[in-house]
Image (cartoon, rainbow, N blue to C red; front, top):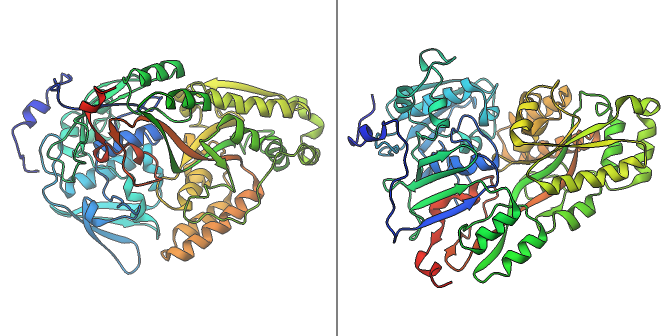
Length: 537
């Protein structure tokens, strides 16, 4: 049993959730990610969830300012790897406290890993099929045994968030996990947290907001004027978002607004716009197991029909860079020499004529292209495709869906539509992160792999690269995979993302570090905010 550092745990275990009062001189940072988030690190895996997890939970391994896994920044203060590359021994930092002021130990690490694997959602796809066992050797030592060599394993552990075993089991409901019940999922999704991160959740309303307070006992340093409270609010309407920025009711906006929106907000005294490079690409994923997008030539026809230049220059202005392959150019291991599709109606028609569906196209119409209903620029991109596709007799039907509908539909090939506009980010700083989550059969059934590629050759190439311990050799294999991916055109590779935010520069300082990993922009302990300067505006 873990040591109880303070009797405060008795108060933390109460069922009522409320927002504690905060002194007037203390600082609150208000920000929005636009869409809903989930406060359980075994459930979510999107941008919004990553931002919440990063602040609420500690991963087993953390990055330093150079985006390299660093034991000095990590819960695992050191680790050893066996000669065969299969056994990893992690030595857990002593004295790290959970938000209920009990100590984090190896028992929690083992529980968290097994919980993630058992639930099988969130970032579990990074470890599925690779981890054979996770065991506790002593109070501060955990052992992970892999069933195959996995070169990037340490890097992936930035997504293995540690939860408080005792707290979750004490609040578990009936469920499908034996003596663990539901693993505390319902309790976490009701607005609680079981983390050791820099901020602790004090209130949560589904699809509305998440309020978190600074955890003063956090083991890593805060910026001198880090916010005392953070308030993530879900704001969908651009007009409302602009008004709240102008009235200083929001301190950081969500990204991917229109150029006009940024220009109007940037003109307001004290507000600046910041561009952040990220390991994210915007895809139009095509269902590779559903007619007619199961046909290579039909997919290539759509790839040539897509108007890449207009999408980058006129729709996603200043938040997009031309794609040069199937992973972002910023990503370590990107292949700069791969073939890249262009907008070319003649080539599109040539490919369409080679499709096995050419003579029976009308039998398979319309082609359903799904766009997220709170992302109107996705619809604009779809309208361009619809315009040009009509010239070749391809009927595109644009289907708006909520993010919840998209995630539910993508769980099965039978409910997945022909194509989806979706951003996907690298979960760790290697091209293989995206190659695996986008194109490996093990990653199917999630929103980031609606292609249902199921290609044995690609799977084998990815498996071989992932099993390669030597970093440079692994990157070379990743480049070869990209060449193979571009030849079979499973998706339309629309553009590389540049996350663009408006923020209250007059009374805020954002960190200089440009960390391209999804969610790291919102590492709140690194932000300075000055409430007294806000009163000057």
